[in-house]
Each structure stands twice: as structure tokens, then as C-alpha cells.
Length: 111
Length: 438
Ligand SMILES: Cc1cc2nc3c(=O)[nH]c(=O)nc-3n(C[C@H](O)[C@H](O)[C@H](O)COP(=O)(O)OP(=O)(O)OC[C@H]3O[C@@H](n4cnc5c(N)ncnc54)[C@H](O)[C@@H]3O)c2cc1C
Ligand code: SF4
Ligand code: SF4
Image (tube, rainbow over all chains, first blue to last red; front, side, top):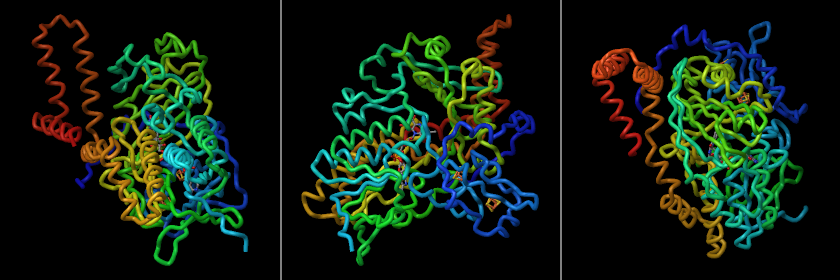
């Protein structure tokens, strides 16, 4: 495996990204929310404190991970579309990830 | 104790791979149960996407009479190479694409997978939706003998199990057939939006003669900020499917929000007019396993076969996955039928499945393109550099500057040299060729 060569994005490119209200975006998604079982969890909040970049806050496509007032990572599992990215992408493997119970979770109409 | 619930075969997952396996086994006379965690087969599934009928025809030769819910035939396809403010379009439109049934159709998975699973039911498969398989049951020798589900008294038994659980292959990992998740540099996260528009609008904007024509465009360059990934624009019957996907590692490294990339792509000056006035019908996201060949799980174990995305069977370069999944599912089904005939469910016997895959396009293509992701990833600005160059070169080429053409050619080469050294270009071309040849 060759070493990766990342170059930081230019500030102009960064600035060209529009702000998007993800909560508004997901109003189009149908969910059957399981109120009794949260299929996602932070394994250990202390680990998140030692995670400076906190990439989960950004790469989750529906914004499940947010910071609360104490800068603790909150998990809004109800919005999850079960893509699996956080399980793979959390650099410290700190996300407990299970499938929702049968019939619950996202239900695409188009897909 | 209630009697054991037993079948000839269990299939986990009602996507293209699982349903193809279930149909093949049911047609061969087996008593098959297909277990799907979604409210219905397809509820969890999302792709671009383009379905290829060759794979479907081998599972269901009479699929056309069964009226599959396709969106539009793909009668024009190709690439857009986007710079921040321009595009070079390479599209192929041909009468050759207009046979009926066509070679490829756009489709929406919630509809297509539901239809495909309904065909399995017609063939005698017992489809159980809203049920998550939580574990594989094994005997004392470690051989798979059934599955546990999240239903009360939900254990189900069979001598053979086809796992077609998709990219989040938790069961495959639990069985030790995959060594954990793919690392973030070998999965792409794609986000997609289905934008509703009246059919006549779609046809006018994309230059289509009617409902019997459609386009599939893969987009490179500015849509992913030049980073390793692709975007797409596909026409559905009354909607445009638009999406963008990047290697997850890039999103993590650059702290990018995928929905912002999508919004940026949608507002690109070349893209925006196609979507103007459309309504957002649905947003969604899904992972794609990239460069599977070298990271493929074992596809056979005692009593188990693994097919489709669960075994990383995606040819990302040609946006093919559903056809590999269907073909692998069918081959898993055929192997299970033989195993039943011979009463041999051992890993040794079931390895015939791997050999079938090797002789087919599934493993031939995956082997050929095994280096593509590494190539892009070792030079993450590869796409951006060349796509921007091609756009600028086209800009010069098509503009009359009142300078001799020979000089213009020199200028165009100069543009490339500004971006990359002569040897850099030569090396990039070599790696690209090697990546394509495998
Ligand atoms: C954005 C995007 C664009 C794509 N574009 C194309 C394209 O244009 N053409 C193409 O051919 N391919 C495309 N693909 C790839 C294609 O979608 C996949 O390769 C294909 O869906 C794989 O099929 P599968 O049956 O293996 O898995 P999936 O389709 O993922 O099906 C897996 C099924 O298993 C179910 N399941 C999982 N775990 C369990 C469990 N424990 N219990 C019960 N059920 C379970 C899931 O709910 C799901 O229904 C694209 C993919 C993406 C993400
Ligand atoms: S990426 Fe992982 S460790 Fe870091 S903040 Fe998020 S969950 Fe915590
Ligand atoms: S699985 Fe995907 S959608 Fe769900 S929380 Fe993780 S990253 Fe977000």
C-alpha cells in the first residue's frame, strides 16, 4: 500500500462549500423510529475528548453526531440512514454500531 | 420446545445478490427462506443507478414479461469533466442502445428490489421482512447450521446459508470470513438526492426524444473538489438522480460534509439548469466497497456462501455492482443446488462457488481493476489536475485568439507543465494504464 499524499484543500475551495441545513434535507427521508432501542452509541466519552478532529461531526451524511453545550458528542440515532460510515470512519473505533431491529430505521421510498 | 424451523436454504438480505440466490435455489426445487431487515426488500437500499439486464436475464429469463419497474433505458452515457466553471462532456448516444429490452436501465432501488423479491415469492421463496439476522448458528465443529433473528423464537435452520448482507457485512465478519471492516480508504461514501421534475421537462433539458430514452452521466473533477471520487447524474422517469461520492478517508481527512459537496455540485453553473424548479423527493446515503479484489472476504465456509457487496464485489471504475451481485447470487444458488444433490455442504465442496466466480466477469473484472483505488489514492489530486487541464485546454482550443494553431498547441502543453512536471505526467499515464490493464 503506497503512502497517501494528502494536500490540504485551498482556502478558496473550502470557502466554496455552501452551508446546508441537514435537518431540513432529511425531512424527505422516511423513518420508523425505534424508541426503545438506540442502535448507535459512543463507547467511551473520554475517548472523544482525546479526539481533536472529531470527524464524525462532519462526515455523517445526516448529522447524527453533534456537540452538546459541554462539548460532549451526542448521538441522534433517529436520523441515521445506516450507511456504516461512522463505524468505519471513527479513527478511534469509539462508535458502537448495530443494525436497528427488523423493520425499524430508514425506509427509502425511492432509494 | 417448538419444533425446529428448518429449510433447505436460508438467504440473508433481499438485495440483488440475495434475491438472485433465492430465485435460483427455488427454481431448482429447494425450500428457501429469504430474510430481510427492512420494512420491505429495498427499503434500506440505494444506488445511482444503472441496472444491467444481462445479469437479470440469467436469473429470470422472462424478466421482461414480469414488468420490472425500470425508470428509463440508458440510450446515452458518458462523462462530464468539470472544472469549477466549465465542463467537457464526452457522451455516447447511439441507436445501438435502443433495443428492447435495452442493455441498461436507470432504476430506483426501493422499487426495483421490492419487485425482484416479489418474483422470488412467485417462485416459491418464503420472504420474511422486518427481521434482522443477529447471528449465525454453528454446530460444535463450527459449521453454520442456521441463523438467529431478532424475532421471538426466531432461530431458523438450514444446511446452507447464503449471506448477501451488503457492504455492512457484520455477519461475514462475525464468521471470521472478513477480517474486520474495510479501512476508510477502501470505502466510498455517496450521498444522493432524487429531484422530481415532469417527464417533458427532463426530456427537453437532456435532449431526449421521449420516455424511451435516458442518460447516465458520471462526473469527475470539481464535483469532488478534485479529490478521489465521482459524482453522477442519471435520468429517471419523472426525476433526476444526482449524487456525489468520495473515499471516506478523504472526507475524514478534510473534514468535509457530504451534503455540502452535494449542494455545491447541484449549484455548479453547468449542472444547475438541469435541476431548476425541481422538488427534492428524497435524500439518502450509502457506502460502496472499492477495490475489492485484494480485500475480498473468503466467499465459502462450511455451510456458508457470501455474495455481493458483503464480499466487496464492486467494479467502481465502471459503476457496476448490482450486476456482479446478481451474478454472484445466482452462482451461489447454483452451488447450493449442487451441494444438496451431493449432500455435501463442506467448505471444500462449496469452493466450487469461488471457481465459478473466477471463470466469470465478476472476478475477472475485479482482478483487472484491483489497483485503481490505490492509484487515485496515492495521488489524490490526480483527478483535479487533469480535469482542470482538459477544461482549460478545451477553452483555448475552441477560442479564436488570432494566434497560429501551432503556438496554441504549445500553450496547451504549457498549461499542463504548469501543473505537473513532464516526468510527473509520464508517470501518471503509466500508472493509469497499469491500473486499467490490471
Ligand atoms: C451511490 C451508489 C451508486 C451505485 N451505482 C450503481 C450503478 O449505477 N450500477 C450498479 O450496478 N451498481 C451500483 N452501485 C452498487 C450496487 O448498489 C451494489 O453493488 C449492490 O446493491 C449490491 O447488492 P447486494 O445484494 O450485495 O447488497 P445490498 O443491495 O446492499 O443488499 C443487502 C440487503 O441485505 C439486508 N440486510 C443486511 N444485513 C441484514 C441482516 N443482518 N438481516 C437481514 N437483512 C439484512 C439489507 O437490508 C439489504 O436489503 C451503486 C452503489 C451506490 C452506493
Ligand atoms: S470521531 Fe470517534 S472518537 Fe472522535 S469524536 Fe467522533 S466518535 Fe468520538
Ligand atoms: S451509519 Fe451513517 S448515517 Fe448512521 S450515524 Fe453512522 S455515519 Fe451517520
